[in-house]
Length: 563
Ligand code: NOJ
Image (tube, rainbow, N blue to C red; front, side, top):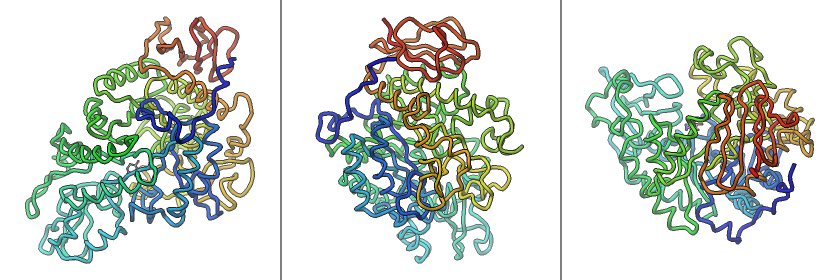
């Protein structure tokens, strides 16, 4: 292959790279789900010290930053996205000192740190919500949330028939005739973003973590914060009416134009730091155009683009999505983002081992996979081959790549978690319909044996299947052709080759083949079909599967340096 793999070591803090204000534009960001990454104390729950102990692994992987899903105090009604205190660490996960040590270790390894901010809702254990429950109707404490009187003689009926994103009702009674609104689980009351105290408190939280050295923020459901509801006492629109309304900036609940006033205030906080703190919005909005608003430099600066995550392994779909998002990024001034897997979706190695989405009934994800038993029509080998090819394609694209822990090990979804060991509220709120997201959150296998495959000294908080042994980091370390070594090689090359944010499509002829070239001659070619195709001219740098002479096999990506 190539001596380009002989790349310089990552730079630590204090170097020019560490103060580069544009670092995020083409970063490779690795998402850590802290409870499932590494457990240093054997209680079955991953923790911050576990992350610190794996700083060398992360540095060797070659990522630029980690994004940590919530590690704050939480009753875990929604995997930590029910935050009881935004400025502390859950005691099961560590302490603020552990956090500082982790940041120092990661920065020392040249890795930036992004943390998750969950501003739409708190936990019902947050001191504000407890105060709201202990306070009367109409009190300032209740005004931090969204309370309304119930209907019926004594308020015994909900104020509206709205359903929660996780299924079931979205209004919960508190026993005195009032009800509160929750987009997600019952334990996640929505905040009232018209309340100045709410706005001020989040500025405080952003400064708190920025002062501790955090480099950026991932903003949970960034499109849901502001609401425009009728005043207390006025009737609320029914669910059917809400669903029929366009999400064009004026919807009462989603993607309202006025949410950007909040982010303009946050931008002032980010820009008060050197380098400015970054942010990426999780915004599931109607169109790519509306998503661009969240990526504006007056606001959060970048937004997740989930279009590839929602696509099949299909050349035409990939090309359309890539072209559209690069054009959009050019107009917004941001850089685009690419994601195949995260803590909310079925892992991409598994998705690509299933029939195309259009051929799957129902919701088309894990539910379908599980309906007829865990192995129904899942082709594990094909899924992993396609995932490896897709990831190499992704890493050659302009923009940021967000990787999810375990994908570098080629992990599949864990489909067969017993019902009584599941944790996700979307499973419990939709009995028999939604299998939930636990299958992508199972703790990582580090070694081929041990009580939790090296995750910790005891059993893990979600059961790991026996096949995890084959995927353990220890089983892949130094093994040519392993998925771990492929990620390491690809990330090292990406760092070396990264260039201007342009892409030129190369017309290859076959409809199943996508090839593009970056400004410095770095060519990525992916064969989405089954039949082998000729490779472009040039020096082959890396491929996601062994190359057969001068041809590119099906479900394979190769990187070539054009001569
Ligand atoms: C989006 C997060 O990614 C998801 O895990 C969570 O359940 C919801 N927001 C609610 O916070």
